[in-house]
Every structure is written in structure tokens, then in C-alpha cells.
Length: 228
Image 1 (cartoon, rainbow, N blue to C red):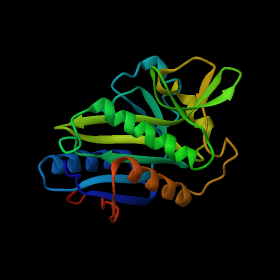
Image 2: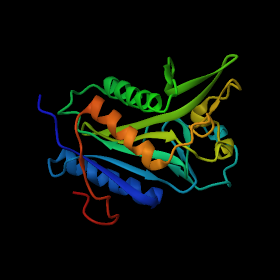
Image 3: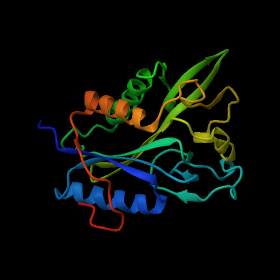
Image 4: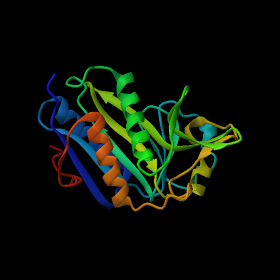
């Protein structure tokens, strides 16, 4: 099976959520139609909460704190904001094997590989999507989340890795529906790993190519224009 062409783009500043989702949906449709290459799109959002398809109203603890967006991705409530690297992953599974479970496993491996590049041991946990860091004493903190959606076998949405966000912002929700006090959230900064976003992106890029294959650099999307 020939690997598809994959573009890699990084947007500066803070990208509005609704515009990002509109672009992703249009780009995924263009990929499915054979009119555009795959795309991995790196960005940061302004502070906001998103509600996945499994979200429960009681897990939105402070609904007026930040804007809340309903989204079609899997999962429950998540936070996005400055200092968190979001990577929207638009891949054509008709050319990569139509195996959603393998896609999630590969995304987890990507996050684990990236964390290891900064000396952090991150691991998957049965029944808890994303990757976790052992904080000792039975405590485990999530450092990266995964939430994807497929349409016509093209993925969109993707991953969110906590580089240096304000962790107090997660307090407005029950992150991913996990209320056990032994499970929290962390970041590279919280783990005493100060990393610039540029350095993080370089490691993220290396890990992606190891697991998913080569990418070519592309200009960031101009929102509101043709996604192809």
C-alpha cells in the first residue's frame, strides 16, 4: 500500500475554534474526494471547553468560565488554551488500513514518543484514552488527550498535548469525565521540563514521521478560503 502525501502546517497566534472546525470538515471532505493531501495542522486555541459525543452536563462545572463548544469528536469535556499544542490530524484511512483502533494506538505511540524526547515517561492506561504520567503514591496525571472523528474514512480532530498551559483552567470541567481525585492533569512545565513551543513542535514532527511516515511543510491554512 502506497503511503499518501501528508502536509504539515503550523498556525501562529490563537486560532478561533469554530473556524478551525469548519476548515477541518472541509479539508476532510476534500481529502475523501481525492482533491487534497492529508494534513497535520498544529495550532493553539484561546481558552475554551469542548464537549465530545460522550460528555455529561454535570461534568461542566463552571459553564460561564470560558466559551463551550459542542463537537462531533469522541470523548467528553476537554480544555484547550494557550500553552497547549493542538494537532488536528486529517489522515486518509482508506490508504492506511481501515483500522480505527490502530489509528488511536498510533496516536498514543506518537504522544508517548514525543514525551520521551523531553525525558518524560508517559504511558497508556486501559479504559482511559490519552497518555498518563505516574506521579507516585497511586496518583496519575494526564499530559495529553486524544479525540478523533471519522467521516468517509478520513480522520479529523486529533490530539492535545500540555506543554505549558494554565492548569487551573482545567478546573472548570471534569476532564474527560474522570473524577477520581487520584487522576489529574499535568504539563511539561509542571514536570519541570520548560520547553518552547518551537522545540516541542520539532520533537512532535520527528515522532510523527517515525510512526506515520514523511511529511512536507506547508503554509498554515488561511481560514475562510478553499481548504484544498
